[in-house]
Length: 239
Image 1 (cartoon, rainbow, N blue to C red):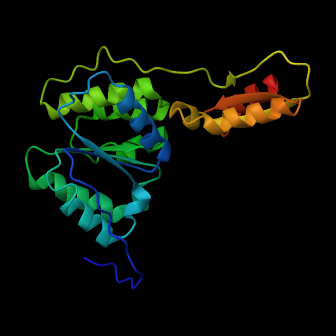
Image 2 (image 1 turned 180 degrees about the vertical axis):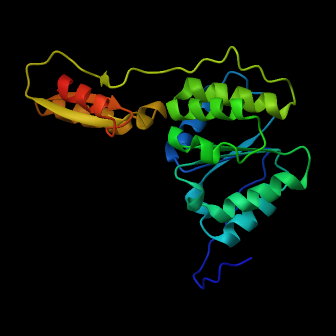
């Protein structure tokens, strides 16, 4: 169906896959890509496609993607930053998709803890495992993404889920990064940890190297958020 808009719409073409990961956060896709590169098991018995949700903003894009790329998919995992109102048509169509066949799994995840009650119950995976996967992705990083992939493989293979031994790897927050004992004027820098957890640190490395070449000493802190007053006070205290 169309939403009545006359604007030109680019339909998304991706090869079909047994697992689809749709997310609001580009860092999720970067982390997934890096994790798949590092995994020792090269004979993974499923393929996975990832796409930013912003690429599926139009109703016709959603319809086309579900009928082509997702036609034979067994698992669709969606991580949404925001409430149901941010992607209402997509949510409804995914509910239809999962009900068309008995062997399909929809995993719907909130991007923030305060949205768990609204979003994490949309899918048909048990809520305990759904919340666990959401926790792993909120914490981020390659090691936690490895755990997510193992859980997905277990679900895909219809094996019994055992979450008791799953550990979420947490990092220091805020974290001092690449601090050196230098007799240069100090320059404070703040990075969000999503950049580092996706191993996308070429720019921070370049910035630090450039500052040092100009006789300046970078003091970089990696933080999850500055909205939390406790974390903000820690940053101020360190600087």
